[in-house]
Length: 393
Ligand SMILES: Nc1ncnc2c1ncn2[C@@H]1O[C@H](COP(=O)(O)OP(=O)(O)OP(=O)(O)O)[C@@H](O)[C@H]1O
Ligand SMILES: [Mg+2]
Image (tube, rainbow, N blue to C red; front, side, top):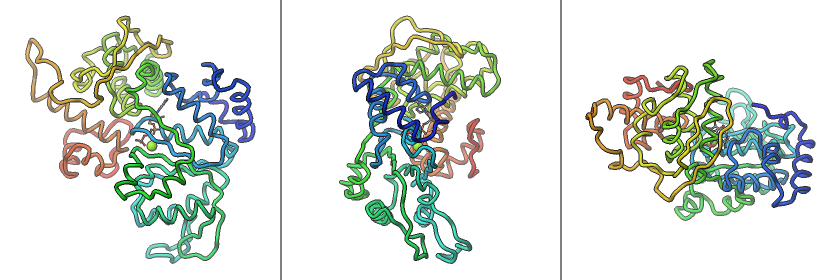
């Protein structure tokens, strides 16, 4: 992707963006200005622009940021944009996923450890606070951090100092903290699973990312972007298109897995189609049988890889989830019910895997299956998605 700002030094980038922001003022930023500030982020709907405006304002600050939003809404993308636009951008951006690392290892991952600090610590190891020194530390899925570690993290953030496990040396925590969550942390505080004081410490600068169904105007542009990307990545003919019916269905789908789900779906469609026009028949049943969640105008553009298309999609207030019973009518000529159910099941499994970054425990939870059943089904049906082999199988 063409992102010239990334190559600027931190100071240049910070100065450029704050000059741009100040010279234009709050109301004066135009489409091109957003393009310059956020070339990697697709979507200029009012709700997205509101979020980007917040991001532009807070990037240069040293205060902690808490990004909230459903899975796949672009929290990590925004976190790295905040870093890129900050005065720390010449230094590292280091991410740690608090839900992906076992509880007993998370502390040493964050703060590092000395040789012999615990069984198996056969050598000294640097933690993420050290790795991110001078830059930004991105604490992803912060809502899943164990309570005991929350207390330690709070102390480190307040004192800006930490000690690696098993060591005595006090080290400076020179990081800007950006945290992200897809949980409602205020609810987690009420439920007693998240510390109120840490919530306040992290939530100095909140950024709320809208779900895709709340910014359906952006869907067409995202489809175009990811179609183009998939076509280039897999070396297909650049005339690969999304036909009008397929386009209409994709634009009105609720996308519960947000941009990540859309991106993976387009990649799947491009690869399975292998070139030419993608039509309604190429879409999986959970797309064609779901109740539309968005209204789009009657003239639906055909999306051609690399083309520019008009953006005009309006959401209506319907629930985003696929509702059993709203799968549509039995087709006139009947249906292969067993195949239909298998396709539907496969698609739900793929979405759960996409949404959980292939974490089988979490995916099984989302599907109400036990892990063994899920793993068996993935194996039997060869469902490990194209771009992310299931590592635990
Ligand atoms: N506005 C956007 N423009 C372009 N790509 C996007 C946008 N939002 C998300 N993406 C892409 O969608 C994918 C998911 O985004 P990201 O990982 O940032 O989401 P997330 O909110 O962190 O998800 P999760 O909560 O599941 O970790 C990434 O490939 C990202 O590049
Ligand atoms: Mg993420």
